[in-house]
Image (cartoon, rainbow, N blue to C red):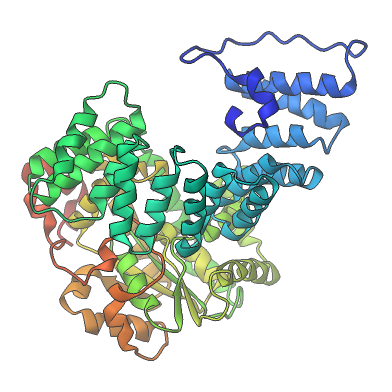
Length: 554
């Protein structure tokens, strides 16, 4: 956390490279020796040292000691917020907000609050605080890069590009700038310019693993490219950190897959996933059991009349890599539709229904006891969030795939919202997930057998939603879209309740940002090479096929 603390603290917190921080012995400051401010500073310094030594409860207790007599102490609130990040992001945001209210001229507080908002998907708030940080500390490259990243994720990569370009003028040696700029350009479909910046990053030895991974992700190879030997050479570097090693293995695997050296590709995919955290399949099964039990026909009948009558939200969902980005792009090519990308707002609202324990029982009580007014208030909060993306669109698409877990909540808040369920051949779908480096929330993709078992749970839950919401969820199969683009596109637009527009057939010409793993593919016309792709991998994928059971090939 020390890189997030004001510079005056840095000298107290840095340990020698490679050294372990010993458990500090806490010497209590004497009130008669120190002023109140000095005593508070000493306690907070000790709190940070304890946190670095993984003594989390003791660290928090020292912050709370300061706040007990100075409830609005900005540095204590700020440090407490850094402790909460990743454990309770909502608490972290509350702490940072209080710190900013007390010390609005501190650019570090503004930057960190912006980063916390960005982490939970509140892009407008993040951008506002990043802008303030840039105003308070002119030519601050870190804040300019954060602002560029926020604009890119917000679907406004055209606003990100000049921020990164300004940062590059200030400090061309900063490691984050060229890759941030390249990612913004890829989102805009400006692949040649993005390629140049990635190559510059490599030549400057800046985030090389990300640069190589980015380079190979925006091209389809038919022969071994020059970059491949460089990637293999980088993999031999014994100083590589775990994350860089993983990205380089993914890059090598992508090239090998493209040039049909499938066995070698699978070796690199396995290496990339070697360090992944184990996914708790039993816990996930219990969560699916819970949703099926909670959202029963009787409970849903009792909630009739809840939520908003708005028809603006459209939820495109399903397994990752099932065609959700393609579906969104086709729909968003219609002049009355805006594609908002993968939004986390619905998940945040659901999490807030169980704020104390995040337990299933707390969520059950909140949903069963939810009043009509409460449901309307939550729906209006969601609507306000998506309206930030497009104030006037008749339909706004939220295409977070894992919203398939929350269809019950969607129907509770938006009985008239359109839902599109994207499906794909089960084996192809799972393999496509396996081939990508998802974040730590999706560790089920790290193992073929686990992937198959997860897919079965997803299928089980979707069957339940189809039973309790008959004829309300449009099933959109990827293979049908590939074989009959116009027929299926018309079917999608009809489901959205809109008149047909021929622009939907040229989705690949659509401007604007795309920020998913499929951002290169959706700039191309529909192609068939991803259908029945699994047949190339033979015995290597037997654990997946066995785990899928009767769903294999469906």
